[in-house]
Image (cartoon, rainbow, N blue to C red; front, top):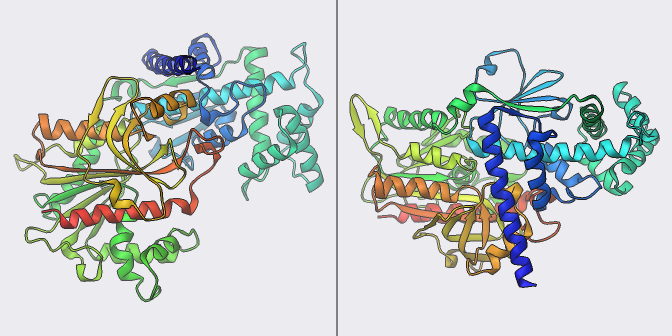
Length: 558
């Protein structure tokens, strides 16, 4: 049994490797047809791999949770488009085309006409892999729908499909009774129960577009029918400019130089700098919220304040903290370069530290915090590599005085559950022999007795979270690798830090590094993958526990 499991893990690993080789080949080629001969290898590998996040992709029934997950990361209306173009930043923002940003992925998209969607790629190859994987899943599911709604002669459609078609094409407003009848018919098409179909319907419902799910299923099936019976193949194209620019750090260099220019303009360039990769709220709130909201929350602990700030209806409280921070040492750099990574620069010299939990009153110069939003996969290397390079100003080369780099993020945990904490001791880069051991300033003991499980050990930096399956993850977890979790950026960050400090001499070799992750999902547990839904308020406690410990260590760093 053990050898059989190992063999399945090896098959899955080979499938992932084949997918990435194929995607790079198709990118170099410039275009391909996902459901044609050129897309065969991608489809076969994905069906062999059967990633947990795509659930029942290899079964006859349509995978609904995976469909929700994927469409939250792709632009609205992409299911209607025969042609999908991946481009660089080629000036569409200066046109009259409306920019569309998917709710769960920061990427600019433009609907060119009824048949074409353009998606800007400014975050590196990981963004391309992510999109191509999701589209492959989407088109596989569309052909399941097509096979269910087309009769044996390939020309006529089943009754349920004709009912759906009439509703969608005429954009009919449905009564409650008509909607329930339609959902029942839809369940038959999808191979799902009425309850499962209703849940998916509700997940896609918006106030402006209550019947969106009906339209999604119709257009997926319609385009699949056109592919099979009319040879109107869907195609994915990569623009010439994108193929020329990818891998050259164009957006990362612009982004990093903008940060350094801002530091120079405010006389902060030579001060002790601590880089923190996190979200855009936890560092700001940890420093400023207890000062600003002291009167509103007298007697409350800080966690209660953070929970309140995390509630969607408390926008006024969040703005109050932001406005106070802007007047007390925080500069906000809205991302202009295409990286989709906003930045906060916090000058601790301008903070009344007596009112905070952190004593930034070191005898030497007070630190400057550079807080960068989350990178995506390989983009972590591009941005960190560029940020750690010297800044050239007035014909001078200025090395940044970087004293620490702290990385906080979400990750998949392999033991435990959502909200638990992982402290890595090394990053292993999936699909290669590369591994990055390091001395982590954060330790398991720093987070114990807080009501959360804490795990310490190696973590795998994966090529894409959407491609992981249980066989590979079990191998990493239960073998001598003893892996505790998976994420996408750690190895890339550490590669940039090590090359900057130990090879290129851009920063001191004494730079401190801190890594900590909180669990967004457990891909080894059925029903606990990313497709099962977000963290909600479960992530608030670990986010702020990690943030506070990072800030404490920065304040204490000599």
